[in-house]
Length: 340
Image (cartoon, rainbow, N blue to C red):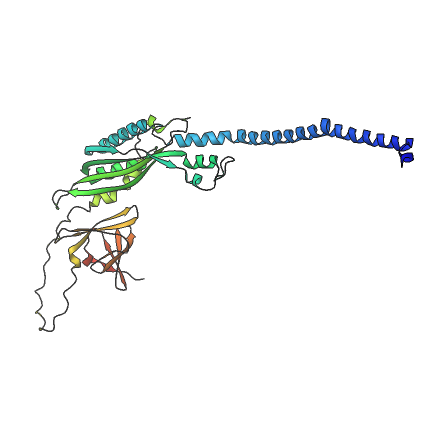
């Protein structure tokens, strides 16, 4: 064995193997490893440049969307929105001719983005990470409620409703109430209450004109004209008496027999309005004998007559298996049957 280790060929072979191994280790450590790391960093930088180039290309569309969003705001701060909202509603009520206009507002409510309440696709934070929790808790926009009250004619009240629904600033009409006042034969004036909600985003920069530059605008004439059929009828006013007509002498009473059940007093209930509320159509009735008022939603009934729905200026009722329609200002006794 010692003789073998002293062999020069073995010694030279061992030295060559060590030199080759040392050279590969040095090449890998000094050149190949750093080169691969630089290539990985270059690939990541290239992808980041492509992503940012795509964001730059979509910037005009994002800017346009932000401009459209802020154009529907009455301001960015709660104080500015409240002031503009009060001014706009007071001006609208006065322009329509209402008297005793009173405008109230509620404190702004903070609203979270519903999309942020589920597994977040925003950024790299997961739904369970700190970044995900921050986004879920972030307030994206706020809402502010307001009410307008005043007294005037039915035409003036409906004019206010038409103007509010066609304003450039974002709003949602939550409901309105029209209560007739005065004698039943006249009732030319009403107490009117309108409730609405507007929205604003304090953190979105205003990059274009806002609705606060023009607090309210007059709607097109055709919008006001759409309410004219309702205004002309004034369903709250008692209809004029029908002209007297000559009547035939009453027929002799039939012979007495077993008495049946008394007739259903459908003639006491008169249709005074057909409106579309927040939850759907509503039928407003007035009992001319007791002055009781009744509001029916689809599925509700009075004297066994179930309110089915509305068709234009007629209400659809079902009594038993038969369906009927009754028009505005008619009593339920004046209903007429419809074929299925």
